[in-house]
Image 1 (tube, rainbow, N blue to C red):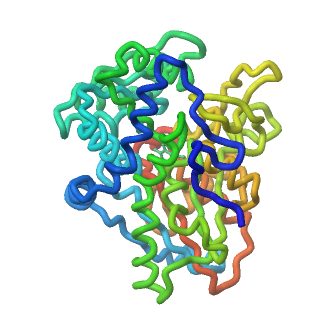
Image 2: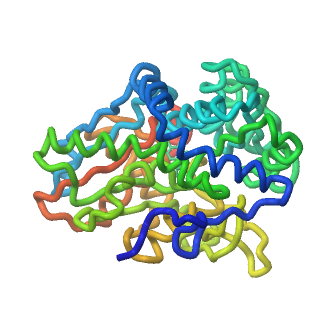
Length: 392
Ligand SMILES: *Cc1c(COP(=O)(O)O)cnc(C)c1O
């Protein structure tokens, strides 16, 4: 049987690892040694779970969507990460990492952000603990994501616009890594998805695995068995999907469907579907599938959804795709938009554009009427209202 978890060298099959500059080697190695003992400690678990309950508002509901179920001929349940404090799953991870940072004696937090969602989650966690917070964001994204920039500032974070390269996420990441190299001893770098050098993908997957942990008892309660037939989630870097599938990875009764952003189509050159359109390379300290030219220059990804246009996909998902443990579907801009309006009108839930990509995979599936399908609604759509209004 394939092993879907990380091996002791930090790899998932051929993907992952920790390709970091020598100056960061010790810092990353300290994190690698620290994370499991901390995460497994009673003290961490008590504080983390207390915050998830009282601050984030967990458990997030598992909602039976009856009208959508009728539409797609299955029993569809929505895992409502959109109801979390700050409006998405990212807060689960940001809180976990800041608790780890404190236990490692770190005194300052840095992060990179594209659309600003991870920046807001990190700034929120930093406000909660009174930690200084610097967020790097591409200058173009600073303009495009004005509201999130203002939220981060209001929360007390310093937002640094990055003027190099295309002035987007990749450039912000480079700048964050540069900062980390200069202040490795006191700085904790909070990465927002299942990307980056080992142990980040495993760390983030474990912190998001609260999603599948809750699914087990919620399904038991609602349908009398603790596993579904299908799990569906959108994939940017891969964290909400990793959390959704974590406790079911080795359960072959459960089929996994990952929706990546097709943009204008996976062959159009305007896409973020790196699992299907990407090739193997190293980005952000990890061997993954990414969008690059023949000489290894990053190709700027494109998706209507800011949270999905990361140029690669985390090593966990690259491995699940290669081994066919997961079925990967590309959902294009127009399909995601249609799905967002459909959920809004059938269930009264306005999803984030990212989550709409998972919903946009539903018409591509062939379900049996009694199939139990769990789809993670990773975030709420308030931030995307302008895009929705432009596309009615
Ligand atoms: C950031 C984000 C995503 C994509 O990130 P993953 O790490 O792939 O989960 C998806 N949905 C929402 C709402 C987001 O904010």
